[in-house]
Length: 166
Length: 270
Image (cartoon, rainbow over the protein chains, first blue to last red):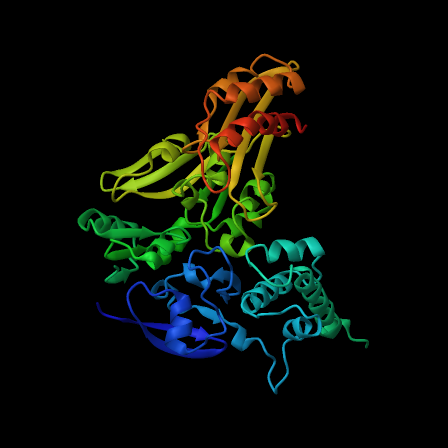
């Protein structure tokens, strides 16, 4: 079995990596690039712990073969922080709102939330519930997560350029 | 175990590979095929349609007729204003994340009880365009759901007429409001004339072995006023076409018990 070279833009950086035949994007990220924030939970698309963004859309990376994604733009949790040691507003909201306990679902939850807010800057509670409906959490009971996503969306709206006073 | 993944540039290339290699597995959106790869598959080569998004994705409207590329993700269809009536059926499948990659065509090849969109398309009398070594063929969505496709045949598009205003019905009963497999799914297109039902197409999923129509339920409505009484009659009649089964979602007994209720509620809302 011969590995293939797959080229991806991962968190803003061009990466070329060798993947074995049939490797998923999840395996490529974790095993090929050492980006282990994206979790391997069920490998059937049932838990959402593997959620990343591909070309801006939230996907289950365990359901995506890596080779056909050659050239794609991939965003993982490792890439969401705004730099200089600052957490992304969604990450900070999870910390402030105690929306993470064991942390296993957290990367997938944050990526699903990021995709939601990018498409809908002012989501309702129902919008958040729908957006994370593919992400299973065993610890929190979801309410703190929902509140954190709503708080992060509000924070991001307040910080957006159009919201600043002239 | 996979030894290779190929991404053919043309449908003809994909069909040739599938025809020549009995170990080739066709991968569209991947939401049902990649888990089999993850678990260990006897197939040795995956044939991905990823380079065929241009010919196989998209929505076209020609008057009241809609044609949708089979590889179109469900999430893209949710954003299509002209398909607003179909939103409940689309949103019935998984989560937004899953729907980013799950395709409309792929829903015909999942096992029960996951065929909610196929059920909707059967009610809409959709036709399916299939391409294989012998060329192009148009088949009904009903036969596609019942029989699948033979080797080396690829579903390329689905087409249907928009339902008449007020004539569309869709209802899915599941254990959770979101991202849950079906106990019973009902889809219907009902037309009325002169105060009575002139035509009815009622499709079932979840309580059948494959998504299918219920001719018995349809016959119970024709020529009658669409009301609680006729809807209840249709619900009871639907049992003749149901094939309830046991799984982790519900028992066959339970599915049979609630099927008439959900048919009635789908038709008249109560």
